[in-house]
Amino acid sequence: MSNATLSDADRILRADEGAPAAGGAQPPAEPETGNDAEETAARTGRDGGGALRWGVVVIALLVVAVVGLGTWWSVQPDKFDVQANTEELLGADVSPVPGSAIVASAIKVADTLLHKPGGYLHNDMTPPGIIMDNMPSWEYGVLTELRDSVRSLRNDFSRSQSQSVENESLRKADSEFNFDAKAWFLPSAEQEYEQGIAALQRYLSAMAERDPQAQFYIRADNLAAYLQVVEKRLGSFGQRLSASVGDEELTAALSARPADRTPQEGQAQSTAAGTGSGTGSRTPWTEIDNVFFEARGYSWALLHMMKAIAIDFAPVLKDKNAEVSMQQVIRDLEYASMRKWSPVVLNGHGFGLLANHSLVLASYMSRANAAVIDLGTLLERG
Image (cartoon, rainbow, N blue to C red; front, side, top):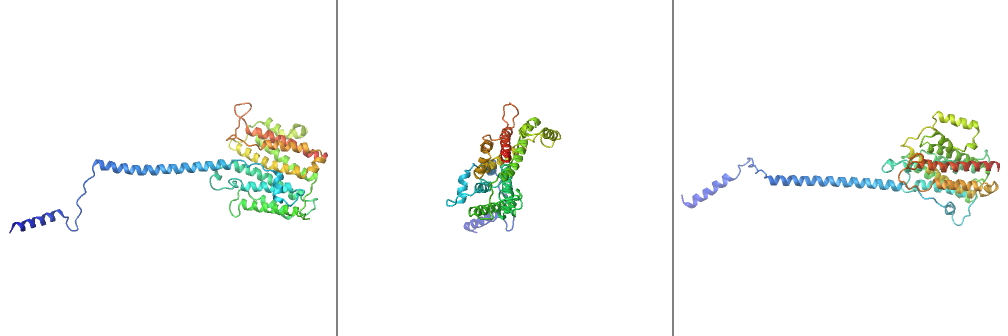
């Protein structure tokens, strides 16, 4: 055999020895060195740490967005000009009619309730509305006054006597605004209240067209009936606000003027306070801000209604010498609905370091209540 043949045979044998057998297992891979293992672990750690950091950033952004929206939505809406609002709703070519300022103010209050920043939050089921309580409490205070005003429109202001037929639009509006404030699905409270606004707008349009079925009667007894409801609301809020400190004497002093109560009434009130009927019991600290903002919402809505009454009932107030009392009510409600700059509702006591926002608001509402009592007296006897 020649040398060339041997060389070829050697090459074939070497190739056969180096190649894996058909169907056999692959030769074991060489183990990673220490540097390769460290590099793989570092790369895995970097990937996991990056995902964690991105998750933290996303959560932080969501928290900031929720807190920011909640803060913005918690700002009390600005007050509006009652006279300008009436002219806007009636139109430039329509002259105001008796009662138009009151109805237009009720429409504007309801519209603000539904279309302020964040919309209507009392029935929200998603954040940030579901975790908010201050603005929903404010909304309920506004809704309370709106319901009282619409009920008075239906039962008193629009009827000449007790046997008069009620206005259909006002009946519809009263029914819609008394819908459950927390309803959120089929139908929602917003849908019902929108229908209530539409009913008030129909009544206002009919008044402007001098429709005989849409009358508004400017009489002292009608206004006195409405003020009796307001008096009770203000007295209730005064007691609830002053209960933030649980002081029975202070609560009794802020609830009504002692001169307006007979000894029997004073004894009855003292008895009620001693039995724990709500007068002498202290408001839980978790509910102090809710009561405060509900009273603020009621004061805000009542302020606009009183301004509208001062316009529509100007002849009656002048005839009864009640203009000063009406201005006193409006002035105290202006103070009660001023912007609150503190981020929290403080609940100090006495002459300590911290203020007590509830007692400050109770003082203004009690003064307004006293002025309402004087106003009602003048309407009856003036």
